[in-house]
Image (tube, rainbow, N blue to C red; front, side):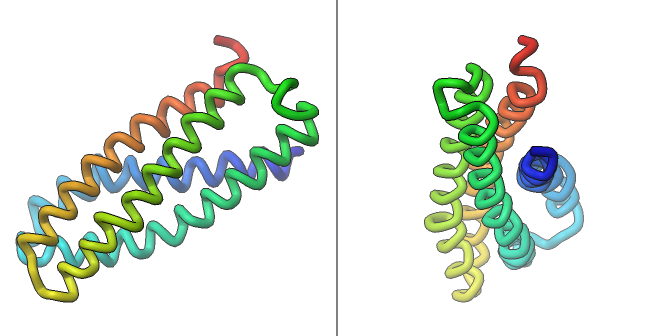
Length: 151
């Protein structure tokens, strides 16, 4: 159980912490320092690296989460409301990530390959908005997961 919890929490920290860093620290710095024509390329390369970690985090979150539900709580009926809330919000986050990865991020990569900074900028903006939504959901999931049974 301790290994499952540790991997579950670490996976959430990597994913949500990465979104927080990208949204709250990197994005403002990029706007201040990097020329607009180069921002799409920078974000494309950064997100390519980060998204590899997100895929791993999602796999570990699902495996460890469901392992704990079925081995510790005896199934969904034995899980508290906070576990159900974490699962529901987490699944929404995953679906939103899949959309980002397979739609606007794919289009960002194409814009970078086509050397189209305007389209790249549009896609970065779209990704930013969706990551902002996912970040809020992720922070709520962390609060619910950390304090849910005490709320």
